[in-house]
Image (cartoon, rainbow, N blue to C red; front, top):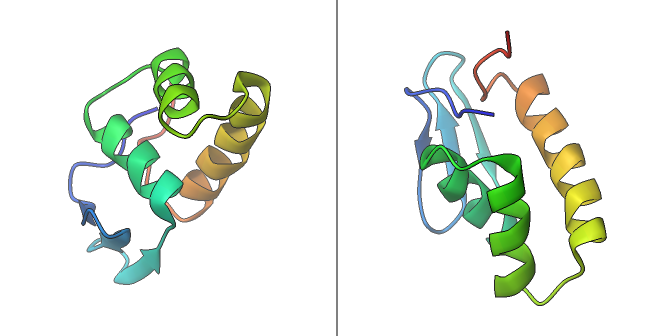
Length: 82
């Protein structure tokens, strides 16, 4: 999972895709996930870091991460996986 290089983000959860002109707002957890993706963290690292920061169970975070990443692909915010 890798966020497209041209996608602009803010710590407040604003996401802008200049390629499409679309903008989005995400919650605190979504902003944290996007920040970790920008750091090229692996899915396992993202799950571990989010679960420790937000005091949530890893299995729930894994499911939520899968859903969130699916949405990022739908909105053309992630690089295509080869």
